[in-house]
Image 1 (cartoon, rainbow, N blue to C red):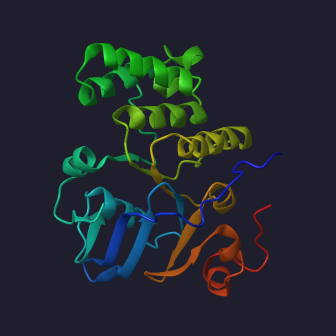
Image 2 (cartoon, helix red, strand yellow):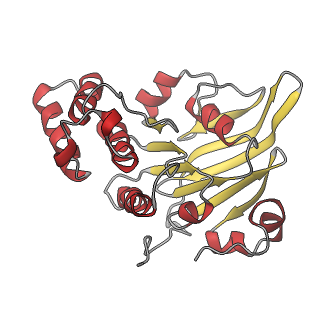
Length: 259
């Protein structure tokens, strides 16, 4: 099987921090979930988010999205403090889009109807809407299933449809929660290539992806962050993480390899 990601962005001529989390702490009742988390997500990179179950990855996603507010700390997008901004403002003003863990499509609508529904919300011009929908159908090779109800699509097809829906608004930031969950080997490979291809487009799009499938995620990440014990315990390129003893102690184990 060939290499999925033929390049990794490790340095930038002009490094721009698209998202900055500064000293984020979160507790539910008296149980602390996140403790003094500081993370920078760079413009144009694919950043993986890894960690054991219950470590707070989904909570961190929701904090970035705006559906959850931290007890302490601040969230910056493009240098602007968005800590108190609602979800729709982050989406409209800063180009934030999310692909949720549970499919992200309307099961009773066809693939085409799903895309049209989103286009009517985010694109004002009718002709532009039609063009964009057809473009997404072609781009993600969904023509053969465009009239199939989403609940009857395969797992990989649903993920592609969800990504196509998220791209209707030309987002600058995409959050993906567990995109590889429930996919077979070929569907995973296909989705990996789809995600990597998003990075080759003209727009400098940042992708933050959380998944338990460490090998599949590291195969396409420029950089990854590992959460454990309420904190960031390691971050770096995939090869750097595999050589990081903290990362192996709390997450990978000694026998883990990417290939």
